[in-house]
Each structure stands twice: as C-alpha cells, then as structure tokens.
Image 1 (spheres, rainbow, N blue to C red):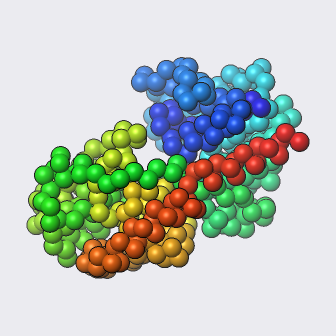
Image 2 (image 1 turned 90 degrees about the vertical axis):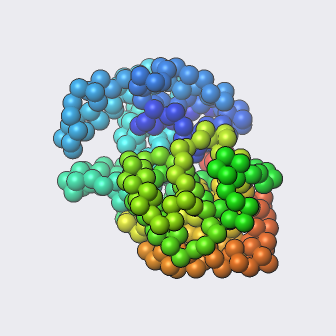
Image 3 (image 1 turned 120 degrees about the vertical axis):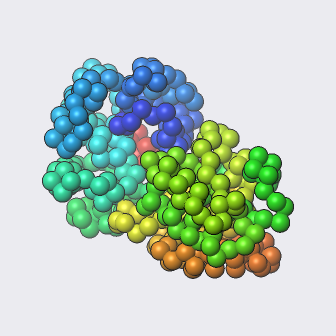
Length: 380
C-alpha cells in the first residue's frame, strides 16, 4: 500500500513517527511523510527507505503570533498540504495529532480511502491555548472523531478519556516503546564530568520545563548525599535552571547538559544509576501519560522514580522496576532515590526486572505488530 502520513512540524526527529514509518516500510508498504520546511531542512529527503516531503507555509514568517494569526497560518498549512497531494494517489492517509487530522479527513473523503488518526496526546488538554482556541480545537476533534477509520492512542487511559468525551469507540493502544536494545553499562557520564566513583548518578533526560519537575529535582538534592544529578535536554526553561543551579548549595553535584543525538543517547543513559521523571499533574494529558523516557531508562537496566500517575504506576509497581512518588514533594522523591540506592538487593532485582520486561513486554517490536495488524485490515 501507498501510505501518506502528516506532521505539523519539520520532522527533524520524531521517534514515534520514524518507528511507525520504518515498520510499515519493512513490511513492504510505501510511506511518504508530509511535514513543514524551514531554512534548515530540505524539501525532499529520504530516510530509512521512506520519503519526506516538506511544504512551505509563507505566512508563518510574515504574521505575528496570536490565536487569530495562528489560524490564518494554519489555514495556509491545510491548503498547501491538500494542494500538494490532491493529484497524488495514496491508499491510506495517516494523521499524526489533531492539527493534521483535517487534512487527512479532506483527502480521505475526496479519494474514498481509509483515515488513521494517530493521536500522540490529549490535544485540547495538553496545549496551553486561549480558552477560545481550545474551544475551536474541541469542536474540530468532536466533529472528526467519529469520522476516522481507526484511532490510535499511546495509553489506554487517554483512550478512555477520548472515547467518553466524544462518545466513540475506545481507540486502539500503541505504546511509544523503544526497539529492544539491551546494551551493557558504560562510564560516559563519569568520564566526561569527572564524577567520583562513590557518587551515584540520577538522570533526567528530555525537555527542560517547569512542568517536567526539574525544580523538584533541584530541591530533592538538598536531602541526598553522594548523589550526582544530571539534567540533559533542551527547553526555554534552561536559562532559569542554570540560574537556580548556580545558587544551589549542592551545585557541584548538579550538571545541566545539552541534548545529544538520538543514536548516541543510549550510551549516556547506560552510564547512570537511576532514571527519574517528576512530571507535574498540570493536565489530564500529563496525568494519563506514559512517557517514552520510562522505556529509555528501563532499556538501560535503570530502576526508576516517577510521578504516581496511573499508567506510570501500572508499569513500575506491577513489574517492580522502581518507585512512584508524590511529584510535588522533593523530600519524598529523595527518599525513594535513597531507598533504591541504599539497598543493593532491591536495586539488583529492579534492574533485572527492567531488562526482562523490556525484552518480554515493552518493546517496539511488539507494538509495531499492532500497527501492522491495523493496516492488514485495509487490504481486505
């Protein structure tokens, strides 16, 4: 089959979209990913045997920010995508997130083809829109929800919210797991940061934002000894984080690093001792999240300390691979870290369980099969 996927970003890196496209290509399908172009990206690109084609939205650089101007720019985006594809034959249209669903809907209906809605998030709960903007997106999603061939969500809990909200069938769940990649431990962080051997390393990797709990991690360090905290990633909150670290009494043990290329990340992750994520309960989208960070950490055999949210708890507690905590309480977070690191037997069992469940349950090889099963239904 010829499959067209849509994104409303430049697609320089999106692990989930890449994994899905690669899985479909490996199964014999042809995949084209439609995205946005900017000065750093090419109009056409081939990656992992699928094609990326990027369109130019001229108004995004000419008009200022703001909800009204956003929808004017968004309208050009939709029109550019439809115009580029109206005469190109595809067998299935696959929309990633709500912004691209109207494009997929228009083309799928014009061509009488299936439409897959791959919702990476509870969109109207996750983006800090103006109330009027959120209402518009709600109306769009409410109209389109019953008009897709298949809807996919990353977690079962988000799927239940979506189904209840729009009175539709429960979406299928495809988790954002990693490919099975159980590599041995490394000493990357110790070597580049000269961390003492008797210090244990607690790692947060990903977007640096207040909502991701990085302030809680800094405060956590006030209750711990012989611990080095590494925060590695990018984000607009990074400058404020640098300032806070500078004034922290434990700043010699706190490191803020730039992100590394995706294909090198595992070498760094495998050199930590615990993976941590104190995501804050700012929305239903966050509360029902199952971050791909959990799979990155577990693939490295790291016990984890995460926020006590339903999907996190399901993986962590049921499989004994770490602890869940009150994400707002730095002392409680520190207590969980200290308990795991102070008990070698507990640590070893959690580490073994982590690699076991990645190999047996939580890997992209298994999740990718679910995607292929969906597409096999379009062949009949």
